[in-house]
Length: 166
Image 1 (cartoon, rainbow, N blue to C red):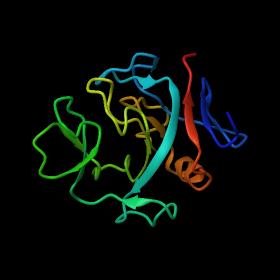
Image 2 (image 1 turned 30 degrees about the vertical axis):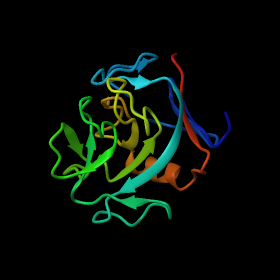
Image 3 (image 1 turned 90 degrees about the horizontal axis):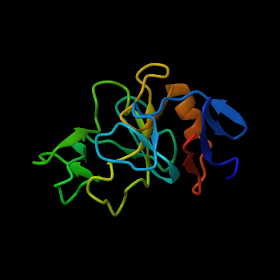
């Protein structure tokens, strides 16, 4: 662990000598992640990319990729593209990356079950904007808009999200 890693504690995320409030999955932390369990998986998860809503904010980092109107994320274990970015039309179960609410205005992608996804081990674990303070997620880690922007502006290529079972 380094100061450049985001370390989940009982009080929030520790990152660069700050403690940042966050939300985790409604299912708590698990060492046996399954699709739909609502849990945040324990482990050392590398930050792999950043997507953002070009129509709502400027690029939060030089390496950010815009979310396009037809971008989706597959969450169907029967989909050959399970746990990957796909485009409309898409015949399998998915979620829109271009949400009406602000949750995915900025989305950090981790390497949880990606890029080689094992069906049923859970789809993407994102770091995104929270619905409201401490409101549970479906397994992702969520922050206030301001704190997520602060984190994004300080990440380095080798930053990880570190989640341990408390």
